[in-house]
Length: 455
Image 1 (cartoon, rainbow, N blue to C red):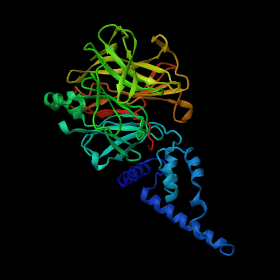
Image 2: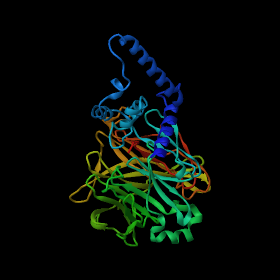
Image 3: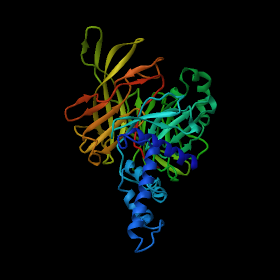
Image 4: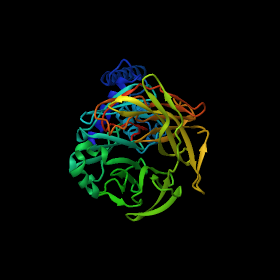
């Protein structure tokens, strides 16, 4: 607990000193000024009231009743909550309680990371700046693999002894998941394919059923081994439980835990099949309802666009994503891409052309095309996606999709490359705005949106 709290203050110090909230102060200077200001006010108060009564440091503003303090904290953003906690120890003890849910924070984007570094680089929509967050010593050298419900997924690559962690970059909390070696196919993978790209080729996608990993009902579901293996565990388990639900002509694409507790798997089939197939899988002492969503969409290439020194095949490819809307509807999002020639050693660069939103009809399983998201904003990346109510944030506009994807498959490129596929798609005018800077990526690197929280 002490390491987690120390890490939290380190991270918060970096974040505060770099951001626009306190542009002239480091955290150390800020704490000194807070203490000096408090001492000054106390002395003024003592001088003014010495003839009336004796001042007690154990009473007054520092001793706000905990119930009242909790009510205040629930109305604060994460930034204001952090600053409030710096005032005194008693306030901090309430502000740092992860089970107290405060106002939602605008999403952050985890940028591509060097697996050997001791920091993570993130940017947030509140100020648009890049911040560095320290990693705990226990996971130094780990590789970032995605996010789910405010937790980052980190893998410490040590061949058969590789370890997977859930990491909260705000509180510093760590939770080790079962060893990858408990997945039967991992041993064969290490012996045959490890040297190509480590766990990058083995790990595909992971989701949590709830952000409260201390809840006994919390479940973790993941896709491994080239999108073929579905596994599940609970935080604290010693092994992964595997489930064979697809045949050799099918593969998992993405997972989603809905608010109703159902586990959705977006699947690709090389043979036409029904769009929705419900299953029940036995996980420990509970039965989990698994909904297989088959994405059988057909895309027809349109014209080839010729330029002086390259050509682009319009709508040359598409990727699919699973979402739960803020209205608890399950959505399938298609990201259409233009295929163009590049100089990346004959690798193709795929430029985002647009998005199509489909709602799954709960009765028939049909994909119903949606023209508007209403009061929603979607945050889409290959390794962490979610929806938010736009009216809850001053930074967000409704009916938009914020995306952070790759122009080139980072598993296939053996040298650093630049991706420009971070931007905003507006459904109102169907335009793509690349309002974020380009970023450098390398083999196996990943980006992901996530919502910061304390627990």
